[in-house]
Every structure is written in structure tokens, then in C-alpha cells.
Length: 89
Image (cartoon, rainbow, N blue to C red):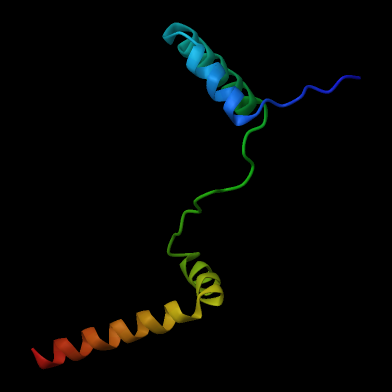
């Protein structure tokens, strides 16, 4: 079994520079179609951006504060300063 030798960066840049605009367009479309097919065949299973609702808000805040304890302190300090400003006004 033969292994394909990977071209160097300079060789790839020269190859790309030698292509015409229509060849570049065709190559880009071909690659986009391949990637779209891969995404259809292997959809992402995990939730990238979880939806935080009132029911799970405390759970997510607990996770966030566990990883970033300084954030909780910062928020508490900010809330304290806001209360103090309201009392002074």
C-alpha cells in the first residue's frame, strides 16, 4: 500500500496560486459539498450552547462558579456596590 506524500506549505501555496479563478471556485465548492455531506452523515451529538432556563439556572451557575470561583466573588461584590449606590441616592 502506497502512502501519499504530503506536500509542503510552499508547494500547496504555489499550486493554489497557479489555479485560475474558475478552478479555485470549483475547488472551494467541491470542498464545501464534501464537508456538508460529512455533517449530514455525522451530525454533532453534543449540545454546544445549552439553553439556560429558570429550572436549570441554579445548576448551571453552580457549574460555572465551581470552575470560576472568582466570578462569584466579583458578582457578589458588584451587587453589593449597586445596593450601596441605591441606598446613597
